[in-house]
Length: 351
Image 1 (tube, one colour):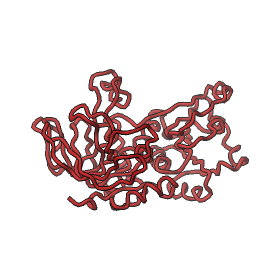
Image 2 (spheres, rainbow, N blue to C red):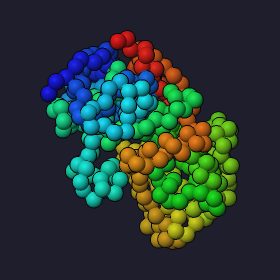
Image 3 (cartoon, rainbow, N blue to C red):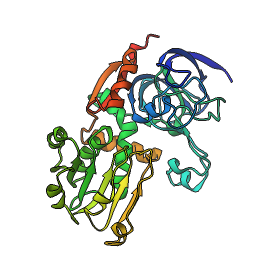
Image 4 (cartoon, rainbow, N blue to C red):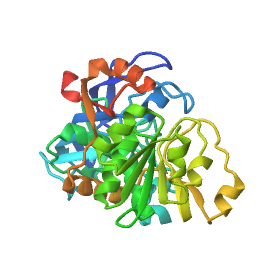
């Protein structure tokens, strides 16, 4: 298969800083869309990957799965994109396209496993996929999203992962008017969950361990904000909430939050703690409560989320950086020193 060299930022070993490298992108196939990358968000899972937290990786690894760009070429069979269009790629760039989940628009649950934007087996080109910390991207149009013309396009990039990660469970568990929704944690995921749940019409209560974030939750639009270390304040919400979205990736006691649910309520985990979480039996059987999880969304739902956020003027609170600052950004991300997402201006990677 014909390929072409592309500049990127990546690493060849765990704990090695990211640096400029050259990768090979496939030439445009009949169903492909190629685009120049304008912006790429930085996700906590990018950090996990380059640190080897999900296991060893085949070098080199080029992170990035919140990718926004402008179309530069389309294959002969492409119907939905033309040169000059805004386009985007999120987490998923391929799937089997024939199992029950793919047929139902739930590609994230594909029976044969999805191909992710980076560090995934590349069924088309061989080797593994390279992410959005690069000048260009090439993808089958089935997995390319139409990017609305957000006024702040850079700040919309994190919607491609963080946005769909919280939109999907909020929609599935029917967040909306008359529903009291709790959000646990205010970070890259939590701050978008506040904005989206409010736009859906829910009453939103945020729980955080940080006094400073209690005030920030209100700025973001939360109706209520509770310091989770304040037992008296927490007690006021016992048996009050219909649904809680849990964005915390550290080990924590979810039983505290199960007790805040009304009957038939659910705590839904979207964070990725690296240790098992214990669930007390009585905390779920009393009130027929549930502890569940959710993982991104399919392509159609991701497009729906982008259109919803564009309609309601929802973007991530973002700090825009140059690619040369990426290693410092990862160090800060590991310390939680960002409000609330880093986004790379890919124009800083010289052609």
